Image (tube, rainbow, N blue to C red; front, top):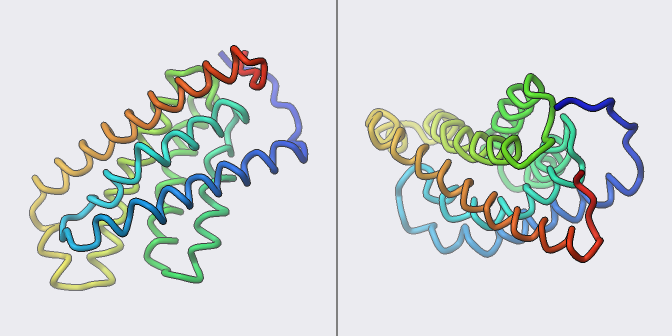
Length: 184
């Protein structure tokens, strides 16, 4: 179902900014829990259910192509001061997600939001492994060389993103019932 896009408004940017803050806070809380686990994608697996809630809310409210780019792009820009590796894999994941979802007509409907979440977190795992292997060299490249580990972690990241979507959709329904969110 495709709709005529309405122009971006200030309230869209403000809402996206708050969702970006939620995604960043989820990262600050979850990533330190996984620092000692040397497995590619583990940070994404743990981060995805929590970040997926905010990503789903943003997609539900904004409902158009560019929604993920607006939220994750700002996060990548902020994190560029911390690590170019994080910025690189976030940008690759958001471009992959936006490209695919652009062909699907945006983020209208829960199925498109599910696909957007799964695609974003799965592609973040693959992009993170590739960029990490490039930056870290032999140590990280050994993990990427074990394709079955990368495939498994990509699938688990996608499932974890699906969990975040499911939790986010529960919040969307509650906000709809309260009359605070219109996703029709």
